Length: 299
Image (tube, rainbow, N blue to C red; front, side, top):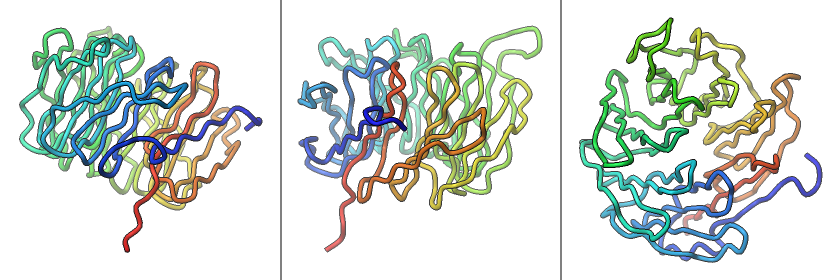
């Protein structure tokens, strides 16, 4: 990685949260970022100045995931309190509280067109909501464990969901010549919890797991393209560059790896001692951004 193309943000230095920071998310233009915490609040920061813009209060238990819609008009958060919330970015107003899950909501993910929001839960289900009015559109069931995360493809053709059972489920959202709306593929290959998902713009799907591997899949066929090994602990987050040629992954031991997909090799290994990484990704200018919080050590 060339000098100057790597930005490391330690949220603990300025987050102002009263408890542990549990999740981080950036807008697609990287102008703002969000943090969620065990203090039940979400905070919005200016990414350039790292100054707090506003505080969002509405949950009654710790925050599990936060997200900014691709058009930056909306923010979503979810919590151990079994709810998700959609907020309006412009004035930080609470638009809708989404109720329907029976247990902790583990992740929130916007569709590429910003019209839909997916939530996943410990109740073994995923739900798809309409952002415009907060209405529930679909309930996706079938996982045999807690559903940890999800990801929409760039054309919103598929939604991938990942589970503690090690299986990735790929749901078809749009009708086409080969697949009917609602059809399903099971992507099997991981041996432990799948904790991270990301689609490339070219349609490839990456999954990161507690089995220390990242796997690349072809969503059209449901076949495994490649298994990437190199992390020594479980993979927490993954992301693609905009040109789909690079993949970034971060593991529990604070190690970030940048992979060249075409060459099938690791380009760079970045170590962030003592920082639990909650986000890693590429900016539109292909700069690597890593964000996380300092690990709290027991006395």
